[in-house]
Image 1 (cartoon, one colour):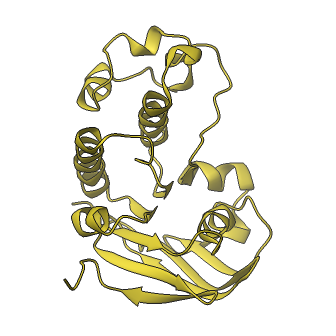
Image 2: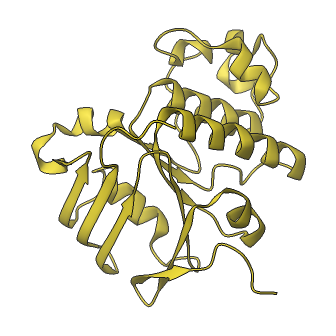
Length: 208
């Protein structure tokens, strides 16, 4: 596992209803984030990606967010929202160095999917293709907003295994919004839960 840099660090962040949020995600680590609907999970990811107004300090590998142009920060700290946007007609046109056919097949997508129009993809296929697109841009941190929400159980575990391997191999700091404790148990190195507008450490596995 690559461990270069100090990872993603958030200190005393305020955004929306959340206040004094502090967390650290080390290179190659997956920290799962959970909380009730409307508790601010997606808003927190957007603030870390510098897409929503916020106060506090955010650093990537020691460099403050405020010292980095927004477009450059968002390439290093890549947000994958629940519904990722697509702006070109063909799937493969979204990949800077061309799509990796083996990676598509590893996630259960046809090898020729990069040649498809985006409109041909189902919701689950779009979700997986968007994940491949994000990782292909070689971010230093990944902000994942329920990246397997539209997938069946078998495909979910396939995507989890692929993601865990890429995150470890490339030393990516990953903050992963999840609500399923079984998934958190499978993927998380640490688990944080939003409770009354604050973050609290939570178990990675159910006590039952």
